[in-house]
Image (cartoon, rainbow, N blue to C red; front, top):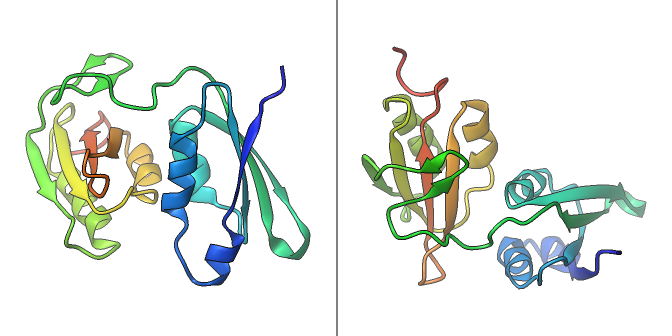
Amino acid sequence: MQTPFVEVDVRPILRAGGEPFEQIMEAVNTLKPGQGLRLFATFKPTPLLTMLASKGFTHEAKELDGGEWEVLFSPAGAVPAKDEHPAGAAASRDGLWPEPTTNLDNRDLDPPEPMVRILATTEAMEPGEVLSALLCREPLFLFPELAKRGHSWRGGYEPDGKTYKVLVRVGEHGGRAA
């Protein structure tokens, strides 16, 4: 069966100097099971590729004329779109996460300060400890940095629709040395 795609063209937003991330995520969050996303952008959206992979999408990127890109995001498997676990218990492949030991409110900070603060805080934490951070947007550039350091994460927008909450579990290779 062929994947039906919802088309999102963010080239006009990008050309006008805007940030289309919210529109892209709105489209992703409204996809029906089995649907994919066809994205048109003025550049290859590398951070988005990683972020949507963490949400269960594979991608095929194709450069178009003039350096623009078409990216097909297809569902790779069944991945829940929303956290279906009770508050304070984030799901992971190996069970439930413990309560956060550290809480950061980064909503009033300008990029890249929230990412810098989160990464610095995880360096002072023990493996297995969980950090909770509130942000004013989804931290796309943070996710690859967390992966490089061996950390796990889970996040999503809070019910207010403006606050993004990310939970980071410090991995074996991150945090303080034993």
